[in-house]
Image 1 (cartoon, rainbow, N blue to C red):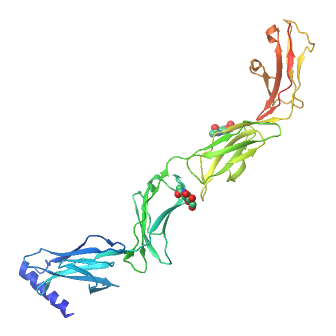
Image 2 (image 1 turned 90 degrees about the horizontal axis):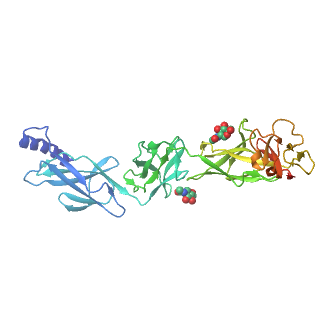
Length: 384
Ligand SMILES: *[C@@H]1O[C@H](CO)[C@@H](O)[C@H](O)[C@H]1NC(C)=O
Ligand SMILES: *[C@@H]1O[C@H](CO)[C@@H](O)[C@H](O)[C@H]1NC(C)=O
């Protein structure tokens, strides 16, 4: 105590003598070659006083323990102005010349690095995140029950708060960047972990689109086909499937939240899918439509009129396709050979004056929305 009293008095006298001004006190400055003591290593502190004048300053070192500044003893004194420390803490120094002391330096915080290594993880850990998705960036430190305060460093435009996790509710490109974290022990504020490795979060500005594929575009009578939905380039999707049973009807959800990208369908229709993932669910754009035709087990009879076997050039012939119960107007007809399919395709095809080139086999089938009948048997026209 007597020591510091001497110093205060000395300082006043010193300043008055050197500068003739009691307010302009020389102040010590402490610098360190590192802000933290690496595991098993040390940090070198250097003290200086400005203006340094001809006669030498002797330097004194201090460390704060629980808010109390004490002379530093447990350190390796390299030289008059340098000391090597291997403990974290708040360090300061001052110079003394004769009985005169400089002002105390500002405190410099030196941390001790502990061997626990933090890891940044993304939850969910999808390689690609889309704008609007929800994601959590987490700092995980393994090792016992130690409680930590967390610090983040990121070059993204939005800073992460000093907590162990950073929940991004609706990601945008300004969240893109590298994230790293470290922990500071709650029980000992000068003990920190090293920085974790950086983890890169990339928020894509595009919205992904689902793509449907079909094993076959036609469902055979009594059968089924497999449809598959995919979203390129990322993981974690579940799939919703929708079907329209006519061009003008509304799409109905037929399968929701399917983990399997493949579904089996046995009904004709206009199908599309979308992907969804996360909580809250984030949806892709709807896929394009895929038209699946279903063959229903009806074979329409095809008839020729006149029905006698011998037809001569110049006669008029009508080929007719008849779907039982199909009198309603919904059916359209498809003919073979294809040259008959000049619209409007009706259930009758009339050849006013047949020629030999009209000889051949004729067949037809009906179509209604996403259903085909089977092809009729082939009826043969022979023109002589
Ligand atoms: C995500 O985590 C799982 C296990 O939790 C792991 O198998 C997978 O490789 C990780 N994916 C990425 C992109 O880090
Ligand atoms: C799918 O078909 C429906 C009905 O024709 C139409 O409204 C919708 O725009 C189509 N979707 C796409 C992505 O083309």
